[in-house]
Amino acid sequence: MPEHEHNHKHSHEHKHRKSVINRLARIEGHVRGVKQMAMDERDCSDILLQIAAVRKALDNTAKLILEDHLETCLVDAVHQGNEQKVLEDIKKSLNNFIR
Image (cartoon, rainbow, N blue to C red):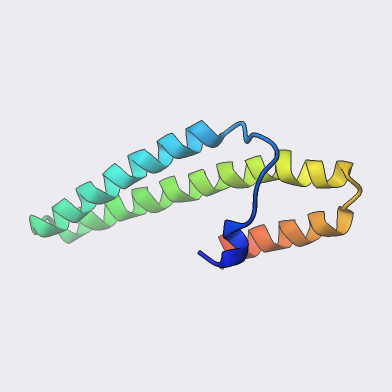
């Protein structure tokens, strides 16, 4: 993780944080299951189907994180009169998510 990301601290609570953590734990378990399927030489189409499910779960989790970002970080910045920072944050978030 780049150093500037380590220094980023939040002064507010994200309402979806627990849900995000729970989703990531489920995804982690799902990925382990897919790995086991590959080790067990399961059918390739079944493995690909499970990979697609993991990708969808990751995308949905990322959307929830982005929603939190919009509802908390960016709203706070607007209230503090940092509209330019808001636009930069939105662009950065979208560029990180959609590559």
